[in-house]
Length: 227
Image (cartoon, rainbow, N blue to C red; front, side):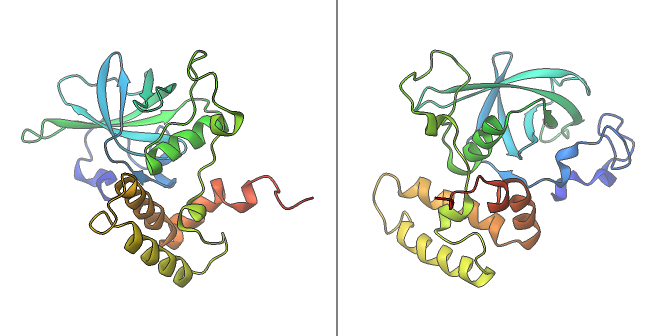
């Protein structure tokens, strides 16, 4: 992302450079911009600017920043499902806010995420729903499928994983026309419209699509065709 350019402040020792071995490894992963997603750290609510399968970027008040290299615990809560997901992450870089904004950015690398929790976080970023919990008493009636959700951007756009760029574009435009909140007044329309936009923002970009396929694409999924 553009605002990861370390040349803006090359002398900031709290923000590792690209040559620093402590550099944030998620820099080259598929980044998904989030909207309205927060996590809690020591009872402090922090906004998640974007996340990937291996880390996230947070925005926080510049008055209270963590030290680079420290491990911290972050909790995500879905108010609708009451699912709560607690993970650990290491602070890889901190960029202090300006005098005007007074907001800082923090780069977090996740620690030892299981595949199901990793996929749940990516799905949270795309769909705004947390369908898995590591709280033992949370929704004990939830079936096994919803506890191990798999993000699938191709399913969101209703296209084949090997669809061409023009096919993906056509499917996106057809669906957003149907789900646009100005025309579709159903309660789920705004969330569905946002979900389509986020999925398309990744699949329309050849580089981002290739990175997504490396982690979540058809070659990484169990074979569902064998009978």
